[in-house]
Length: 402
Image 1 (cartoon, helix red, strand yellow):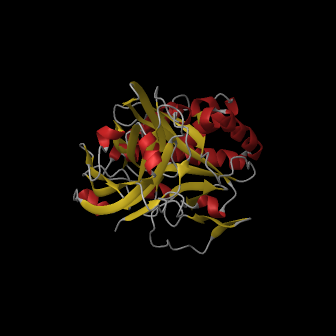
Image 2: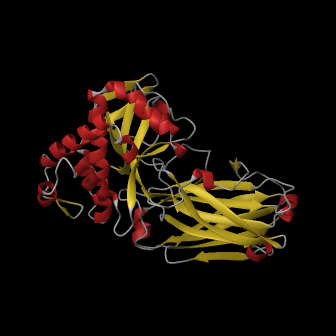
Image 3: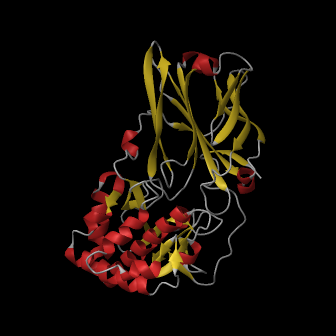
């Protein structure tokens, strides 16, 4: 079943059946907060379809569990750790900076050795755990665990980050929830800890919880990450406006090709952004963003979906003033860092203009298509078709004048 909606009209995330709520919950001033996990987080983080992802998740788990234990035993450190993250660029602190404190470093070394020795697995994420443990010492265990977040040949480093979005409380040191940047159920929840108890953190966290969510994740080493790289200057519109005349851009069909299902559980939430630019600078950019709930089986089967949905309607004046357009499609993860989409360029009033865009994705490559084009090159006239196709997806868009 597909859900197509404008961002801002509906709560974030795919509309799915409600998750059952265990009897025991943590309370916050705004109601229910995090559910006590009904299964081991580490078990829920397993991913037989992608052992590199599973290995990464083991690294996130071990660091997150150690951090949770540390702030539980050393509550006086909560404010200083949170201040370090708040003072870091884009609220993302490299884990090695946290370890510059000798007390924290020593604690992590001993605690990681203890946690590793108690794991109920002989192999996790392709890692021979008895061998891994036998090679671990107080001197090297932190480095060995940190290396678990490399994805194949892609070098990554651990980061602790805050989600800088409306509704998230970034500075509540007395009530910190530690999260792991990976889903643990079919409802886009992530695993974590509150008061050193394993919990499930739901996607609508901000609607019922005023606590601070601090997430353990990874960035690619040496890559441009995110927010500061965005060159878009307009504001996101929330809906197609009802107009008697104008130009409508529709999406006719869509296909996401197997195996490009980056969610290890449940269905996908796919997001599409369209940006239109007046290169003379007389009008602000027009930015529209949409989301689609995409069935997992439709990716497995590489099914072509008949969508036939209106995306955006431009007034005749707006469309006439547009010189360049940009369309990007990605898989959205609410808990993830904002990561730069590969930029692209287009001719624009006899010059070249570049579009740069960031979106929340667990990993940088979890996008489907990026397309820059001139207005007349992409949608030259009424009923014209634009097809965007690559190894990951195929989508067909159309211009309709009325």
